[in-house]
Amino acid sequence: MRKQREAKPLADLVGKAMTPACRKRGFATVDIVASWADIVGERYGTRVQPDRLNWPRKPELANPDDPPEPATLVVHTDGATALMLSHDSAQMLERINTFYGWAAVGRIKIVQRPVEVRSTERRKGLRALTRSEERRLDERLEGVRDDRLRTALKKLGAQIIARNTDSAA
Image 1: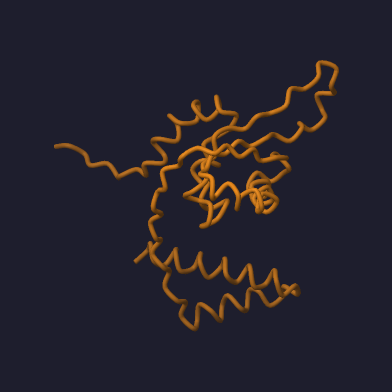
Image 2: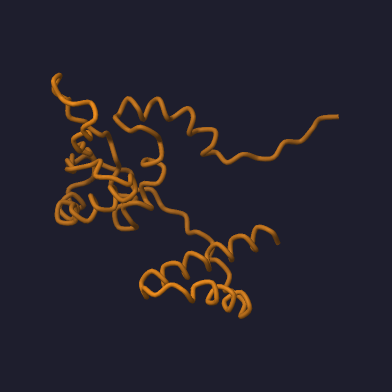
């Protein structure tokens, strides 16, 4: 009798194979390539593709404890999108560096090249919370004084509660 295995996400299988290829392009992991649409947003997620990170060489006499100089991210896109992207590059840099958690990228170099526009699949919407779930979430957030932080935490908490109970059902 053959034992059935659980299905594994394709990203788990492909990620290990793609990481060496990404390292050759200057990316430490496949994460930025896989999460690109989430990082840069809906407007550029399908029309701009990250190509490589060019890290500046460290001088031989440089202190090894000094943080590395920011890299240049090379992306490719079509001509019309390149114009919009050059206008929004500061915002994109901020999003990318937020993803990395430090100022890893200092500049974006835009290369105009045809890009195959991929359609993004729409994620299934999460269910609304019940009144009792919403009440419990509000009670947990009572001590948070900053309104923006409380709003962000409430949104995150609602998504977590909805996902966890959806997958359990």
